[in-house]
Image (cartoon, rainbow, N blue to C red; front, side, top):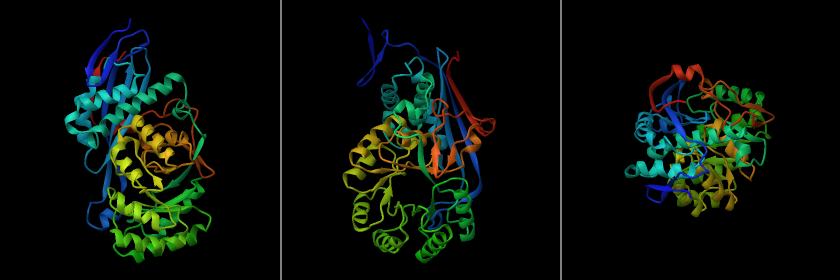
Length: 393
């Protein structure tokens, strides 16, 4: 007869015959990735933030008694990286001895270990790195790409590029970047808008449409910079471009404003990347605030939470376009029933030895098991802090 030990409210640590393996060791790494060029979007042009010069990553590597391994990560742009690492370090030993298959229960245990700091934001972003590593391990143990373990609906996903269209780049550079992306097999182009002078945004978009032609899917991203009247005026002005979506036209938490805008425009409205929990996304869905939902698995607590949100989004027939971290989101988008989009950023490529295949406008799921990535020597060189728990087999 199986025995149980109550470890946290509402959860039990199993010790029955079904437990075939346990987590023996893990390593946390705080990695700072420098950006070649300081990045500016509307938040910089309106004085809310400084240009972004680096991205902080929290990597979690896990090994089990039976020799199975997994790697996951979370990240923070600008502030927050050291805080994620510090919180992960506090709760890391909670994972030692756990059955790595019990991912949902482990997620709950780790959240309760830091319950006083809440179930969203920095705390659950730290938990996300553990969660993603456990899913990577589970798929590797099965010998399957993560998308196949989850149950893929497709082996490739439509993709669009964002990194070539920031506001700091002159228009000619944006046009050159777009042409290069399309030549490299990327299917769509997104550029940043939200400049203090809206005429500047419209001129750049006009030039881009003329440059790439009428058949290339285009998106714009205002990064929360417009108030409701400005969003309404700009939304109407943007209708003529046939955009796939207008992204974050309003404050990320203005569900009612997004809902009213979405109802008034033909162009779909997309939002969600800045939200830090499933519960916050539920408010968007409850208000019909988005035609396209854009969750970020590391930001909302990992793959376990993302799957919960994806099921709800499908129920409401929403389009899905996960934010950033294509190395994770390719698999999750491939498992979403409604044809999604994945955002292409090449910023993370130096961190990994492998690359994603992109052709014919789509990202392709590889045959590599798990997420399909291993940390590079460069990632090790950019590591600024480490912590280990347990003993490596």
